[in-house]
Image (tube, rainbow, N blue to C red; front, side, top):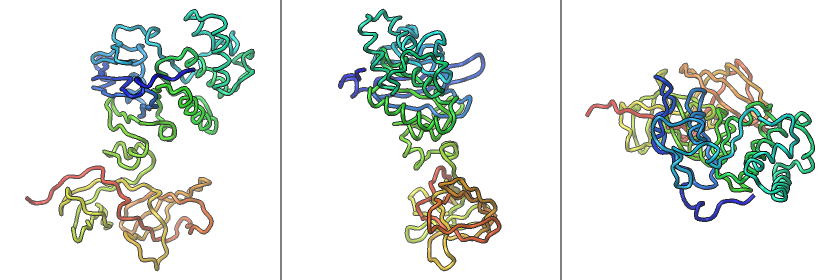
Amino acid sequence: MQGLDKRQQDTSYIQMVHLTKTFGEVLAVDDFCLDICCGEFVTLLGPSGSGKTTTLRMVAGFEEPTSGEVYIDGLPMSNVAPEKRNTGMVFQSYTLFPHMTVAENIAFPLKMRRSGKVETEGKIQEALRLIRLPGYGDRFPRQLSGGQQQRVALARAVVFNPRVLLMDEPLGALDKKLREEMQLEIKHIQREIHITVIYVTHDQSEALTMSDRIVIMHQGRIQQVGTPDELYEKPVNRFVADFIGNTNLLDCTVSSIEGGICRVTTTNGASFDLPYQPSFGVGATLQLALRPERILLVAESANVPNAQRGVVEERIYLGDVIRYQIKLDSGDSLLMNQPNSIGITKAMPGEQVRVYWDLSAPQVIGSKCECPQ
């Protein structure tokens, strides 16, 4: 299966321009704009009802935009039927034909395109190699595991060299371990054939694992677009910070600024320091996101920044990580993740502890200056 040429790789291969979709009075997708490069793996991520599947279906041609346009390789798709868009589709349900063998399932789109017998057989064998199921061509879907069936569905979607692969919650029916294995399999296949992928999921971990870029959607609108690192490290608003991974959200007020350090106080009275930013002013209100893994237990005698005392309310053992719910003396409640490593100090529920975090650990996700002019 051949990848796309260098010209296509260097341009925006898919463009969604001001896509809007309404169902009666319900606004499902609101002014969606996005460019996707050739060979890029882009995930639409959001809760149920955020518009991600509707957006995917507009790219596939299963839904007609109320307004806006989809371009693939520079060509408008508004009057192009789904079967003429040369896109592959993989759904959560495998949709394999139960009366056909694996080889016949994979060959089905080639048959519809009237491919020759020799070419078809060669592509079937290449597809079976790609999904790591050589020798499985004569089996029927009922003789395969769920993961193997999903691989066959993937092979059927890419065997005819589509321009774009569209995937709608394809791993939702699999158990956790198999789902994690398939995430890596799909990414491996995507890189090998260099196909452009638009992937829909509500699973944050899945999106972070697989994507070159992630589009966070909420109530039909794009909230933020970026790499997994960018979204996790620099969320632009409270929704993104709260949706991507676990986080502690703190509302604070700037109480003083001195020597490049900004002192803030939470609504419950906990005080700690941040690096000063020009947009800060005394009296400004800030919204902060503090990731659980950035909070550390520390000995009473240690000289560290932003030390806070509290009590362990809950301890959850997750194997590689121990998760604590800590109630600070101020009344603020913090979630903390600690690697389950040898030599790491551990705490039990009811135990008094001291925690701290680096000055740069909290992420500013919103601010409003209320200081006097």
